[in-house]
Image 1 (tube, rainbow, N blue to C red):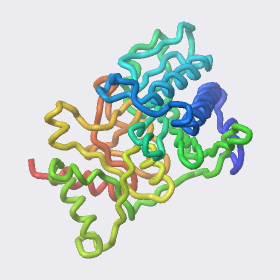
Image 2 (image 1 turned 135 degrees about the vertical axis):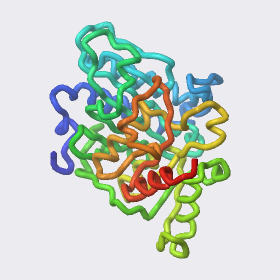
Image 3 (image 1 turned 180 degrees about the vertical axis):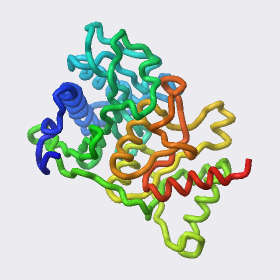
Image 4 (image 1 turned 45 degrees about the vertical axis):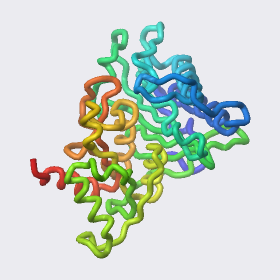
Length: 326
């Protein structure tokens, strides 16, 4: 593992170097656009919905275009899949070794209130043939690298190449990402939790049981107090876990079932890369039944419930789901 203050390029494997360099270049461009914000007219909606049926922000479209351009111009990416697009964008050159799935701007609904947002990416091997959507519909364990970029008070790139997790911070003076944390580990025991409590009435019994216990804190069966946090940006929630521990939950609920959805967050380009990062940091990532890394997505935008973070807490949630009455 490279030393602290080593540039991101120190961590590149020969094969992945152009992909990681393109992600770093794209994130610098996105970070600059976010920093200018309303000064350059970047805020606001474009008046259209994306493939998810969600209102697109101007910065959603911008970040998607920037990420796609840099990846396809890297010389190493055969196809990309984005949260903002129905299908794939392919490179016409044969023999490129990698596929990349990404969420160009996670948490964009928080832009107008100036809360941290981010970009998530997942890298996996490309097939010998021209890529199709089916090549992205594989378990998260097929990933060779994953990470995210957090655009906050500083811009940080968090990365795993399958052998631990490292954090790189962008120096705005020279445009280089330098290592500022290596071998990140998450404590097994949580002291914080994040969940949208407004949905409590719609949750399954297992989640209500867990939630009511942590709310009781030292006065309940858990015997200790918990702090609660909720940012509504997946990147920021996971970054907090990697920084100071805890657990994040976005469970299945009755409204999602009524809408015909299998969860809120997407597997291919949100949950799979986050699950890889968390497992590499000694934490856990589950849908309440089994590890998210083991799930085969049914389509490019397949969704799943998510319980991410401190291993003891995720294991408890899985146990409560097993014990839940049919």
